[in-house]
Length: 310
Image (cartoon, rainbow, N blue to C red):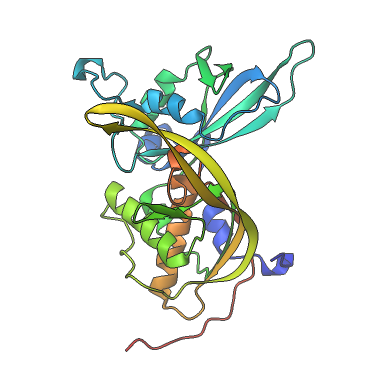
């Protein structure tokens, strides 16, 4: 799966074309969605923090909590706490620097990805410098101003690079839910439908067509990874009362290479757009818990085989 530099995929320029917010004219920033933000946190070095620990923190920053009166909803529109698909995703946490001399604390970066740019004002207001947050059993402090590191318009995500192969690395466990069960097998037709349905819920005017059921023109040519189990705790209402419920999730970690060498241009362009969207939205279930984080990698492009559609 490691091609030579001369065979680097044509889809990478499209993804690497994300526009850093600092490079944009002031009047253009408000119209850009989705976006990716980094929150610097100062706290214990090498602390064991569960993957899903940031969920409660970011939910408190962005979501409309149940029972909160309208008068208390400050800082602009947010994502509904009980929405089936929320307008943000987060994770993973990553070390941003070693502890300063004479201090045990280190800087850790929390990545937050917004799918509705109206949430950016709320994020800026809630995650100001000095704010104390709890991650697992440890306390951290926002170490400085948060920054937007990438943005794209829905139209940008639909611009096809001409790619017909996409190699992605899933850096956190990724799974798909169906009939109340989760699976680590990220079949292309299931990934495409999951992402397309989420896009349609956010901006239906620009969303690619929903793929049909059953196998489509995209297939998996290479696999390099494993399944990894996560134990997640979520709050559900039973008998009108909130309860904590544990769920065991098996997710895929590693590399997959998707190929659309026998599909039409429209089919390849649609999957290309969904892969670009997935870099912001995450793939599959539990993206607000840090699952489903993917990054693009270079790969070679296959020869195109034109197949007539009856």
